[in-house]
Amino acid sequence: MNIILLGPPGAGKGTQAKKLEDKYGLKQLSTGDMLRAEIAAGTDLGVQAKQIIDRGDLVSDDIIIGMISSRTEQDDCQNGVIFDGFPRTVAQAEALENMLSDKGQRIDAVIELKVDEEALVGRLENRIAEMKAAGQEVRSDDNAETLRHRLATFREQTAPIIPFFADKDMLRTVDGMQAIDAVEAAIDAVIDEAKTVS
Ligand code: AMP
Image 1 (cartoon, rainbow, N blue to C red):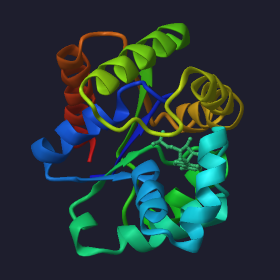
Image 2: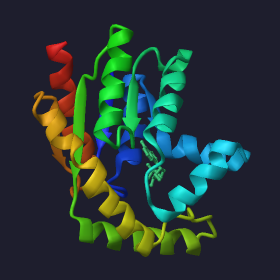
Image 3: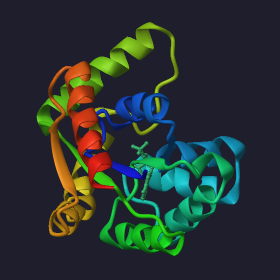
């Protein structure tokens, strides 16, 4: 089973993806985490990506598609994947569909976490304050100014994949402003429905 979690930065995709990983035996693939690993390892890709990420822009489709395509070949992805933060453009969505269909697989559910953008900025500011108070490292693109740019990037470049999947009747929307447990229950219901279809 392959699931896409879709939503603006800070919508809770990562939190929910981790829960799904354990429950359904799927592998969470976060392109953001993969890029941060490249940065930490100091690779050429990481050096290029850091500037783009710190601005809140998108890394090129070619790089992202290449990265996902080789990662999904690995053994731990064979049970299925929860895509977190990917696809972020219609070109990435089309590439993913082709990639999966070449393997005789498909996207089983696209789950949009719908959230209020203004509330996201508030949530992020709280999270940063909490992390700083706990002495934890804060991501270099986690600040209110970059978040606003990331939200604009989402509206302009990522939001078009919502009608792309809705037109194929693959999109299911969950209210991401609910408590974490309620969001989780709503996602479970979507996955149960997808299971009965397959
Ligand atoms: P995230 O951790 O998903 O919020 O991603 C952090 C940053 O990594 C984004 O703001 C982008 O700059 C970059 N990034 C992550 N995933 C993608 C993607 N699928 N396409 C393009 N850029 C991405």
